[in-house]
Amino acid sequence: MAKKQNMNEKLNTLRAGVLGSNDGILTVVGVLFSVAVATPNIFTIFIAGLSDLLACAFSMASGEYASVSSQRDAENSAVKVERNLLNTNINSEIESVKNYYMQRGISDDTATQIAKELINKKPLETVVNTKYGIQLGHYMNPWNAAFSSLISAALGGIFPLLAMSLTSGIYRWPYTIAAVIASVALTGFLSAKLGNGLVKTAVIRNIIIGILTMIIHYSLGKLMNQF
Image: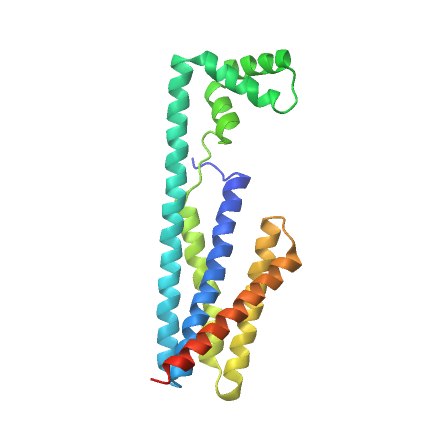
């Protein structure tokens, strides 16, 4: 039976989703602006944007998979080391747990008693949690992070892609700009909520980054169109 995700695992999956969505928005709109300035052909613009959306989604997914897999490998390695130390040098493990509680204001005698009792009841779980902050049996799942990034990057990039592709004439640019600003504002809001940060600051920061991205790529498209 599969274990349920703990809070850290859920937050990691959500974080990967928010970051993937933000990257999807910015990379797709960058390509759309550069290409749209160079050519009015809507099919060309759409194909360029769609290609970038897919590339970004799979790139984000593979990056998250590699990153979380490395973290999971490190956690597994730490567990193996601690399991060996419990068999070969249990006194050092007790001392380590005791120091953990003393650093949090517990007296020497009480910390020693707590350490011995915890090591006696749940030795491996205790040492990996106090030394590394690892909850035994709850390791970050790389597939969860990868799928979260894949889907969110694709969903994020689809908004500017549709805004640019489904509108025409004088409405194309303002609709696309509005779609980008609304999208990055939303990802800024979500990232602030997940990280207990300042919502207003995160939203404004994301909007500024989105606007700068559009300006840079629009300018780049104009420049390349001169050749």
